[in-house]
Image (cartoon, rainbow, N blue to C red; front, side, top):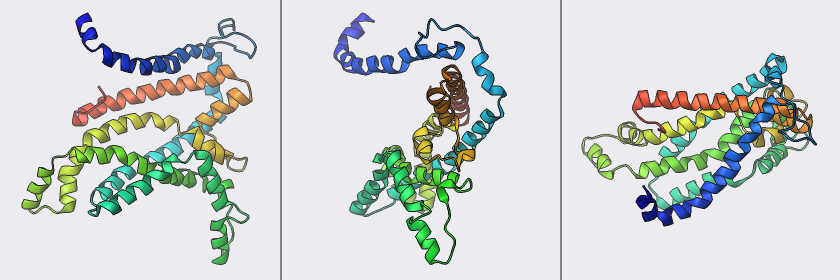
Length: 297
């Protein structure tokens, strides 16, 4: 073992900074989990705070919490239904573009929104959808319709969240699938053409099976997001008018912990979400291995 370590010492030395950072920022903070079982207050030490057992989990008896869970699942399921297959379809379409320059242009344009922060995206949405002077409402008014308060509507909030997520991340998420497509042996396509297979048949019998391992891994890693829809996207779009449908677990934790000072309860919510996410990953990985033999481990 020591001989192997010495042989690859320079490789281990190169990854050492990453391991140290991972330990400092991912494992050391896990000690804060104890806050979920203590009565922690600002100005006192975590370790000196009194134990309260499972009292901080009393939120499970509050109707408001289950409304937040319902909002989270509703938005996350919608984002998963539309967001998971979208990059796969876009990658298949981009792969079929024959003109190399146009193909690179489409790739660049589709990647670009990923580099916009959600604050910028929220500002753009407010500019386009605002009730007074927004481009969309101006078009509606010119067409003879009544302006719509999009950002304050409980009916429009979820479609806006899902649509903006698709616009921002679909292009970026195609990178993995396009890379997986390039690993497929071109001779398979040549053989399929000789047999008379068209484009759709080639995609069905060659491309999709070729990228199925990548799809399986992305699916496993995406499942935990069912309980965390992304505070950075939701929070800038929240307001008192749409709070009924926009309040999700991430914003609930932020409001309970930083704004109201219930640190124990907010930590308990985060811990419960993490445990559920772990269970979902383990279950999805096991299911994936049984269905197609592919998994993370």
